[in-house]
View (cartoon, rainbow, N blue to C red):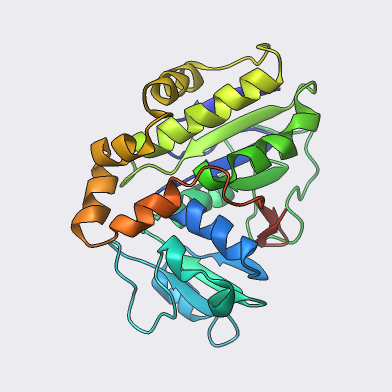
Length: 257
Ligand code: MLT
C-alpha cells in the first residue's frame, strides 16, 4: 500500500481517500454513527443542508456556531444516542465537509482507466478518484487501521487528506495523519512507502502524540474553540480509540463501516 498525506485538501488519484478533520467534523461524525445515526450527508452549503429537512436532522457550524434553525451544532458532545439514534443527518461545516466535496467533485486531472466507471455507487459526484472514502480522527484510529490492514500487502494507493483550516494547514489534522501513518507503518512491518507529507506528519505525531492537550493548545483551531467555550469538546476529540466505527461512503452518504 502506498500512502501519501495531503497537508491541505486537493483532488487526488487514489484507491482509498481518508479525510481528517480532528476539530471537529470527522470526530463528531464518528461519535454520531457510533451512537446510532443512520447516515450522514455531507453538504457544501447551509442551503444544501436545509433542503434535506425535515426528513434529516440538520447539523453543522459556521465559525463554530450552529446556523439558524439547525438541530445540532458541530460539537462531538451533542451527537448522543438520544439526539441521533436512527436519524439521517445533513451536515455542513466550514472545512470538513468542504474538504469532502473537494475530493468528491473536482474534475480529474488524470485518466483513471483501471477504476470502475462509478466507483462510489449512485453518488451525485461525476468523478471520484478513490474506490473508498472514509473519515478518520483520533477517536477511531484503531478502527481505521483494522479496516485498512487487509490491504497493506496490496499495491493500493491511499491518500490521507487533512481538511486543514481555510484551505491551509492545520496542526491537529497533520499530527493525526501522522498517528495514522505510524500505526499503518507498524502494521506493515515498516514497509509502507510514504511521501514527504506522510514523513513530516509522522514527525508531528512523535512530537505531540503522547500529549494531545498540548497539541490542541498549540493548534490555532484548538485555541479558537477554547476561547469560544468549547473546551470540553477538545477532551472528546482527544479520546483516542473511543469508538470502533469508521464513517464510510456508500450511495451518497456516510454510514458506519
Ligand atoms: C470544520 O469543518 O471547519 C470544523 O469542524 C469546524 C469546527 O470546529 O466546528
